[in-house]
Each structure stands twice: as C-alpha cells, then as structure tokens.
Image (cartoon, rainbow, N blue to C red; front, side, top):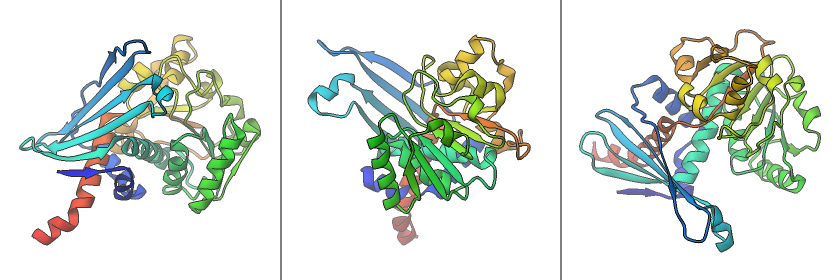
Length: 320
C-alpha cells in the first residue's frame, strides 16, 4: 500500500493537472453521499469533531477522508486538525493508498477556486488580492496564477506581520507579492479577490468591487460565518461549487437569503453546470462574479486518484 506524506502529496499534485482532474470529476459519474459529522466527547475539554467524507466512481475508485478536530490541542502544542485520505479499488475494495489529508485538502480547495476562475474571472485578470494569511494563501496564489496571467499579488491579514511573512514566502516561490494595510483601497483595484478566513463578519464589501471583478469566497464554512456583505451578493452574479453544500453551510449565501436580499434563483449555476456547459460563466467584461466554495468530497477523490496514479505511473510503465 502506498503512503504519501505531506511533501510527497504536494509533489504529486501539480496545479494544472489537479485543476483538470477536478474538472473531469465534476463532469463524470462520481457518487457523493452527504458527509458524516459527529461530535466526540473529550472529558474535561471542548468536544472534538469527527468528519468522514466518502465518494466513489463505480468500478473505479472508492475514497474517504477522515478528519478530526480537537479544539483544545493548542494546550498540548499540537495541531487542532488531523486528516488522512484512504483510497481503495472500486473493483475489489483493496486499499491502495493513504494520502496526507491536510495537504490534499489545501491543494484541492485552491485548485477548485482556480477552476471556477477559469470560467468566471476575466481572461486578462492580473491583480490578485488574497484576504487571509493561513495555509491556503500561498496555494491560492499559485493556483490562480496557473489559470490567469497574474503579475501582482496583494496580501491582507488582520495581523500585518503575518501578511508580510506570507508575502516573503510567496516571493521565495517567485510570486510578486506584497502585504497591504488598506483592504478597501486594494480591493477596489483587484481583478480577483480570494478570501480564505474564519471571519464571522463581512470583510469585503460589494461597494468596493470594480466592474469585471471576480470575488472568490473560500472561508466562512458555517451558516453563522461570512466574508462578504449583502451588497456583494446583490451586485454579483452568484455561482457555487455545489448547490447542496451552499444551501446547507455557506453563510455568505444563507444569510442574505434569509434576509430576503437574494433568492435561490439568484444562484445561477454550480460547477457541475459550468463544466458541462449548461451555463456559459462570465457573460461580459464588466460583469461582477462571485464564487462560493464549501468543499466537496469529489474534489478530494479527484486529488487522491491523481496523486496515486502520478506516483505509480513509473511502476505501471515498467510492468507494461
């Protein structure tokens, strides 16, 4: 059985290949049950959470991501989140690989945003604003740069030191990145704004979005959280990764829906519609587009299959 740790997983998931793999999976016949979410008691501490996200392509591959979240792990100097992905044969059930769950999740999340940008961002989009300085920020820069001619990256975070550190790491990767302190001013000039935060209050305001801007919302994964305000969803043409996920978890969609700012019909398409050609995506150069992602198990499966087949390909070639 193949075991891929963090570095090996990253090396096996090149951006262009991963984006294409996720696109094929949205176009294919993947079965994706509702994910399992369980509270786990930890005596004397906050409850932990166990997440299981299964998906399979009949007769091909079966996969499940297992994620545990222990909020009080910081008291032990340990990460709060651990995750692994188990990939098995869809013909025999034989276990084929265990893939690092954290790296897989981070890369597939950024790749999915880039896939959406392929349909929704202007073809000449060159200025990217990343809101948030967490693990995803570097991935988002690289993923978006693989589908659009990004020449300038601005990074904003609540902590300027963290933003400057992220910008330094980005420059080491060859990205022309700088930290910024003026979120509004930078947002007004950005072609793509990509948010990956844990904010419960709007950070990006619709009044700031210039004609032709694309707003990419990745964080705010609970109904009580949001990264954009009502004016943003009012002004923009709205797209989501999956309708089921958006309608159950996405605060950026659910809160304005509840307030009557938008209706369900204002969600014009999901990624299934876009990759199948049922919606054309961006309709003109001045249109403001908004993409809300909450994550889908098929994205993990696409990445795990790609990582497994990429690593195994030399051995398969030798056998043939």
